[in-house]
Every structure is written in structure tokens, then in C-alpha cells.
Image (tube, rainbow, N blue to C red; front, top):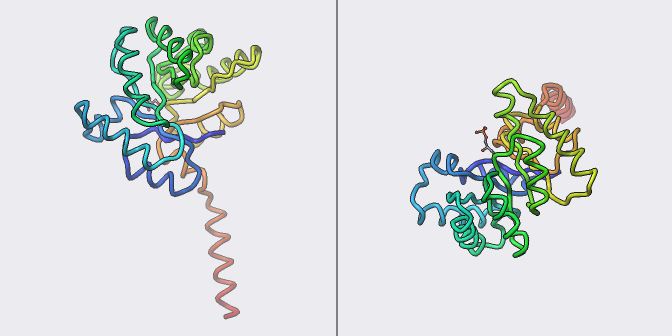
Length: 217
Ligand code: G3P
């Protein structure tokens, strides 16, 4: 299972990278704006900075919503760095763009996926990753994890190579449940990854080991 971090915050990306378990980064226009990164030039530079920190895939989202615009933007993004994955929204022209990039050998991440039908279509179009937003489904009283299960079943039925990138992951339980279901990747905030290491019995046990060591020295 791959761990991606869902942020444009360079300090958090560095922290995750230094932990040694980071496989990639996902960003979107909202995450960029949250870090105060605006304007095409700054956004492009930020993608390059992120690629310098991490070893794996870095999703960079197109802003265009028409096929020609997505192709133009996506090609420019892909040319920035070999680690860039072009993030394309789940809309009609987006499907055409996914197919176009797949034929060109350019990696893609189909974003804003909220149904199994959308995920099926993205796989048919040759998306490298499909991003179902599980947290946002949970937000509207719909089971986000159930969607991951449905997509897993469908992809396994037909050996689709598209990787399931569980997105809008909010906490450690999302990560664990995704791991049980067999999502290929999760992307979430730093805390959803670092939270996995916490257990009070570990802290108590370590304190005891160190105290006993000190007694004999
Ligand atoms: O990966 C998608 C993500 O950025 C959306 O997350 O928490 O805003 O629903 P959230």
C-alpha cells in the first residue's frame, strides 16, 4: 500500500519524507491556496519544489475544463518533472483527456470521483490513479469506504491496472479500513499517517524499559 500526503505544505511534505514511508504527494487548487500559493508562476515553482523533496508521484491538477485546455495544461505540467502526474477532473472532457494522456504514456490521476460508475469509466479511459473522495462522502452520510470496496471488486473483476487512490482521507481509521479493503494508495493529512504510530501501551512500555535500565546503571 502506498502512502501519499495530501498537502502543498512543504514543511509537512519534508516531515513525511524524512519519516521514510512517503510514496507521493497529491495537491489541488484549494490546498495550494491554503498555503498562499497563487498565480501560475508560483504554482509551477511550487510543484518543482515538491518534486525536489519527494521521490514518488506528485499530482498536479489542471484548471481547464475543456479537452484542448486540459491537454495543453497537462502536457506543460508533465514536462515540468518526471514525477508529475496530471490530475484531471471526472467530467466528460476529462475522460477524453485521460484517454489522450494514457495513449501518450503520461500518468494521470482522475479526481472528484464519488461513484463506482465514475471509477469504471476512468479505468476504461486508462487513468493511472482514480481518486474516490471518501471523507466528503462520509460528510453527507454516505459510506465512503463502501465505495472503495465496490471499486476494488470491479477493478479486480477485470484486472484493471488503474490504482485506487483513496482520497479525502481524514484520519487513521480511514487509512486502516482502506488497507483492509485493499486500496492501492491513501492520501491524507500528515496526522492520518503519523497517528498510526501512537499507542499508550507503547509509551508506558518504553518508559518502563528505560526506568529499569536506569536502575541497573
Ligand atoms: O485528496 C482530496 C482532498 O484534497 C479533499 O480532501 O478533506 O478537503 O475532503 P477534503
